[in-house]
Image 1 (cartoon, rainbow, N blue to C red):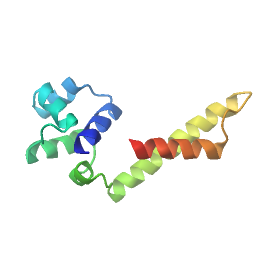
Image 2: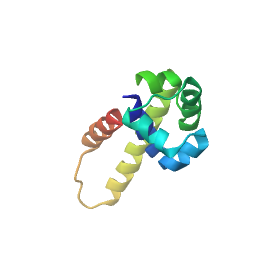
Image 3: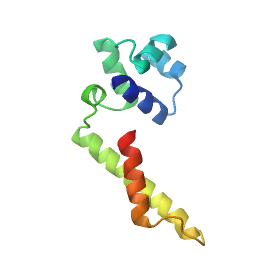
Image 4: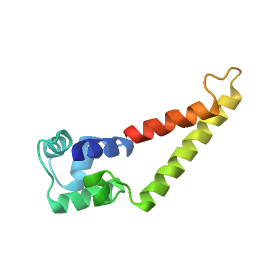
Length: 112
């Protein structure tokens, strides 16, 4: 699960494996192995990962967000819902209701 979280957060940050590996001062293949769960990062690398990806080490290890991260996720969800709602207001036909969009976005964030 650690590897999946690293990969998801890296993609969310818009970084390639090579870019993140460079920032962490590890090889791209080492980062790839972290993401695949074939290798565990050292404690120092874990701390650097958390700083580069903007999350706590607790979140990387457990998947449980801190209160600050929960607030950040809530704000992100709200902004995405508002943006989608604005786009829907501009359309003639609505493919989804506001409630359906909220459920869809919440589900997408839970899987990330």
